[in-house]
Amino acid sequence: MPSEISPAAHAAALWIGLHLILLLVLSVLVVRQRRRHGVELGDAEIPELTQAIRAFGNAAEYVPGVLVALVGLALAGAQPLLVHGVGLVLFVGRLIHAISLSRSGAASPARSAGVLLTWIAYLVAGVALLFYAIP
Image (tube, rainbow, N blue to C red; front, side, top):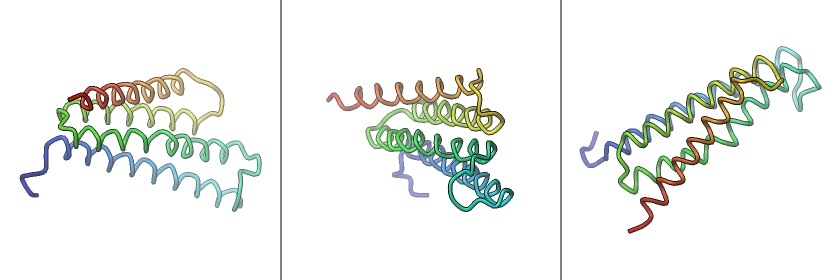
């Protein structure tokens, strides 16, 4: 790899790759439920399919914003530890949330923890980007 790529860019690449794989796995779980229940469109009010759709959809709603933030942090010259921290917190949050939501549509402490970790990743990334934006 070229040496001019910053360590923060490598960190961002790691977390972007892991989040893309997570989104792919969640997508495959939706397709699996669709095939299992013979549903091509919508959820046919099948709880397992609804949960799989929402686990994917919720991740698809939250993940892109932080991935953009990771790229922004890397471009702004952030420390790799910050990029890793934000990426890890988001990944753990989304994973906990997806597993919990896939098991039950009801509110749970694990789902709440996943949302809280996601919000923490958003907050830290947002504040850090504002910090780096000030010359």
